[in-house]
Every structure is written in structure tokens, then in C-alpha cells.
Length: 284
Image 1 (cartoon, rainbow, N blue to C red):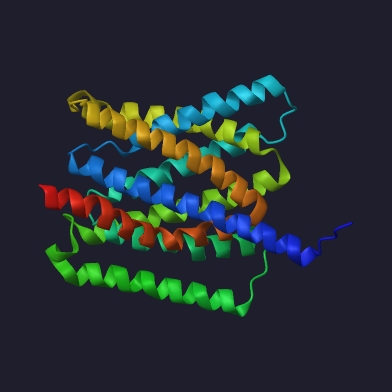
Image 2: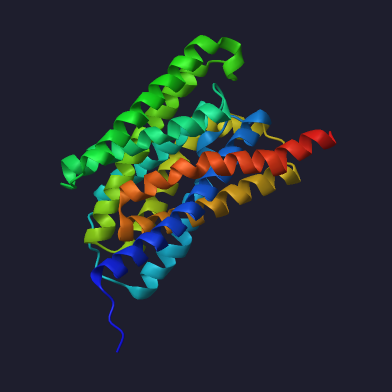
């Protein structure tokens, strides 16, 4: 009979977490490039980009939940608050592409790591060693340097107002970090399918209301070419996969592990630029 030690099981869980984290990081990088591409086309509708993703979550996981007919374990208004925070976090980050560069947005995403660690320490009583705390300090210093660089770079930083864009990213990632910690609490104390169903349903409602108020006029002016439609469908599919895998990773490894996975998004961005955008630009 083969026996596995606790350390071996823990190592296996960590390896699976690392693999899931890299898939999530790649999906996040794709979404960053897609959001930047939509902005380059002159489309100013950040909430619309996430609407189809929430709708797909509501349809798929809502259908599974209705089929299973489980007893509701979470309070609906907690999920509504979580969805509202998530929608606004996505809105602010996507909005930032109108003012600052893709590089700055992706670098400033790391601000979510210290936010998650502080929130999990305060609300979930997670303990962190000095090595991880030192990493948070380094991350914070890196964020300060990026913002300081954009302040003094002027037009060279990219975007019409780099500092405003950077502040939008920081605000958006703070909200997203709060949402991640809320998800960790719910998936570890409730049902993952239920969480995704409610997040998708309430996210769809909140996004639809916000679109009707802020983006209705923009949508009327959009020229829906085949490329634009495919871009939005790709974003919807990527968001569905991202939220599904994030819920699994947070349940098994926690919100901190999930946000640490984003550190490799810059590597994926370099590869996409090198083998995709760079070659495309040369052909032009």
C-alpha cells in the first residue's frame, strides 16, 4: 500500500495551484490586451466589456444551481454587495486604459497583493511570515516608483493623463482585492457553484443598470464590425474561464496565491507583444 505524507499532499496542492495560477495569469493578460485594443478603437464602454462575462456565469452556474436545487447557504445581499464591488473594480481598471499605458496598468495590478494580504490578515485571521511581509513592502515600493515615473514622464508615459489612469488602476485593484477576499470567505464556508451563480446574476444586473446610465449613448455610436464582435465574445469567454478558475484556486490555495500568480502576467505580455503584436506591426 502506498502512503502519502502531509507534505507530499501539500506540495501537490501547491503545484496544482501554480498551474492554475499561470492559466489565470495568461487569461488576465489576454483581457488586458483586449481592453487596450477596444480602447484603441475609440470605444469607451468599460462596463459593457464585462457584461457578457457575468451573463455567461449566470446562465451556466445559475442553470447548474437550479438543477441541483440546493438549500441557499449564503445571504443574497452579501452576494449583491460582492458583485457590485467586482463590477466597479473591473470598471475602474478598464477605464484606466483611456488615460495611461498598458504597461502601467499591468505593473500596477500588483497592488492587489498587499491589499489582499492586509484584508485576509484583518478579516480571515491569516498569518504571514516576515518574508511575505517583506515582499509586500517591496511590492508597495514598486507601485510608488511606477506612479512617480508616470508623474515625471509626461507624454512619454503613454495615454492622455497617466497619473489619473494610475489612480484608477489602484482604486480598481483595491476593490478587486476586497472582492477576492470575500470570495475566499464564501467558497470556504459555502458552495462554489452557488457563489458563481449569484456573482454572475447580480453582476449582470448591476452591469446592465450601469450601462443604461453611463454607456447607452456610446453603444449606439459603435460600429459593430466582425472584429469588434469577436473581440467582445473573446472577452466574455475569457472572463467566464477566469472567474471559474479563480474560484477553484481561491478555494484550494487562497486569495493570496491567486494574486501572486498575476506577477507573471508581465512575462506573458512580453511574449504576446514579441510573437503577436510585434510581428503584426512589422507586416504593416
